[in-house]
Amino acid sequence: MPKVRNWQLNREMDYPYEGVRPQRQFGAVFDINKCIACQTCTVACKNAWTAGRGQEYVWFNNVESKPYGFFPMGWDVRLLNELGPQTWDGKTYTGKTIFEAAPPGSVALGFLPDDDDYAHPNLGEDEIVGMIEPGSTLAMPQLAWCFYLQRICNHCTYPACLASCPRKSISKRPEDGIVLVDQERCRGYRECVKGCPYKKVFYNAVTRISEKCIACYPLVEQGRQTYCILSCIGRIRIAGWIHPPENINPESPVDFLVHVRKVALPLYPQFGLEPNVYYVPPIHVPLPFLRQMFGPGVEEAIATYRQAPDDPELLGALLLMGATDRWIDRFRVRDGKAIGYDADGAEVARVPLKEPIYIRPDFDPALKVYRHNIT
Ligand code: SF4
Ligand code: SF4
Image 1: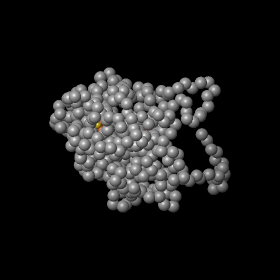
Image 2: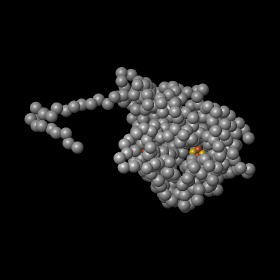
Image 3: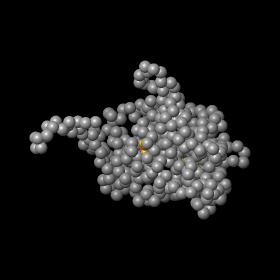
Image 4: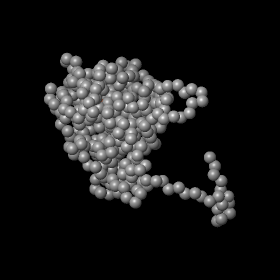
């Protein structure tokens, strides 16, 4: 099997396909701490891309409550269980990836969910770990916790969906690394559904072909953010080009958050796909759970994130999330403001690091009226 370099594992790994990095790679950062699970992103994506027949249970974007929420049912715990011990030696992964653990005759360890596993898209919503006893007060770390996990296709550097397809119907675009299913070539064998550990390829039972998140490529081609990002109420998301560590652009907000400050981490890096959606981990969740989900960098990421109020550059990059519909190629912080620029150097976003507060006097002498604050 050919060898490829996976920087998230800090080692080479087996990949059963031609592993060529694209010229540029679509990436995104989601800050879990800011998500309110309003599902606006989910509905925006649904309305844009999957409102047709056979797509009733196709959710290119979903937000699930962890640890008890899944879509489809048990997508991660089932594979984690089958993969066996996932050991790290410092930053180097010493366990097996899903490619290295593939059973004979398969390219990746995986499973095909049952139809019923797709029946409850938001099962487990807001279910917490632990009991809230009468008289409990908020303590850190919280004894009772849950958090929201925003999920789209990761447009992986080493996609298992692509490697699994016997028809070669899935491709990774060289110009932006976006992974697409060719709807003409696909025959609906569902090997991609089985192979994707994140279960982000869906089978349409009406058209009998597979479909997946397209990273809103018509918008990306115009230098615009994706629909899930444009619609996000919590302003928790930002898309941008992500580079491998030896080739980063420290002025890009995505590279900055992932590689410079290292506050954003990949989801289940141990699967071995080098996923390109990164998460700022939730600060209130027990570390062993987070280490399993985001790898060995969680402690450092949370400690750095907590310092954001004293780190203007980090604060600026975080505040630029959702600040514009444009793609931010470069940012800087100046005079208490974070400023984003597009690829042509034009300013596309300007956000104050500290929101100004205006206190309105009770009495308005011009109108001779008293105004009272109301709630
Ligand atoms: S998340 Fe799944 S569907 Fe998306 S590129 Fe990776 S393997 Fe393919
Ligand atoms: S729109 Fe934003 S805040 Fe709302 S659920 Fe989606 S990611 Fe979370």
